[in-house]
Image 1: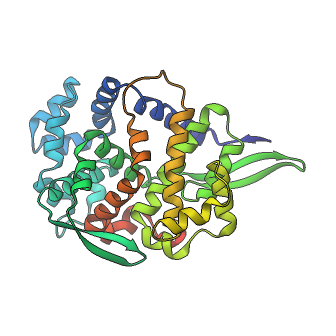
Image 2 (image 1 turned 90 degrees about the horizontal axis):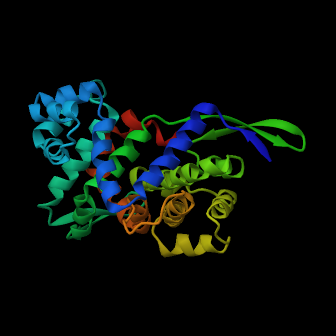
Image 3 (image 1 turned 45 degrees about the vertical axis):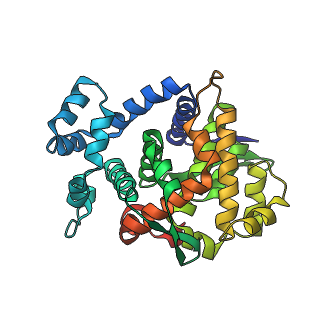
Length: 321
């Protein structure tokens, strides 16, 4: 089967594949890339905004000194959060890029968790229970590369890609719709994209599973996926159809449990299929894959605590997912 994927989206898949390779590099390589990537994502307006609070941020960007500790301290400052999300601040989209806004949210959650004695845990559609502790969420956000990962993930879904692919079938070329918010359509790209773009598709499938279960768990649990969609996604993950019952039964929320298991699998496959030299470093994509449930719970916490009232502003209507 042949296909023609739009060139812009093919480029995005290649970039995702490359990012997966970078994030699967040696520990020293991760540290260098992570420092560089914080500043790569900030726009000139973002830097000007942050430099107004701490001039050393502007100097770090200008001199390429990658002072991520200083940047992290500014992002975690409650004053910055209040300036973007405080009462009466209805123009966050005009004052900050999506990446900066979500980086501030992630850092705010990390800081507030330091003094939390309990957290509200998602346990099912429209169900939360207070759970003592929160130590595991604190530890997950303690790593700068994981905070970067979550900020990138959230920002990427403020600019969703959709369109058409042309697939050569027995009846000739036919157009197929795809959307980054439709896991079945996204998974279908695995059948048609070039080998070099498969890690990007797998990475994006893992991202989507984490996004849907982390930011829209109620909608995902209530609406489900449907049996046919489950079968297609299991095939995309290289899992037997009998696995669906195990995944949905062993984890909360039905479709949330299925996507959690598949997301873990897709991240593993993305790292495994991305060509890079074997190293002793622990890849952040693999970290998130191995700790997918913890990553999902962290996003549940951040969403309920900070993003719930403004999710539609950033991500659109969940009924359209």
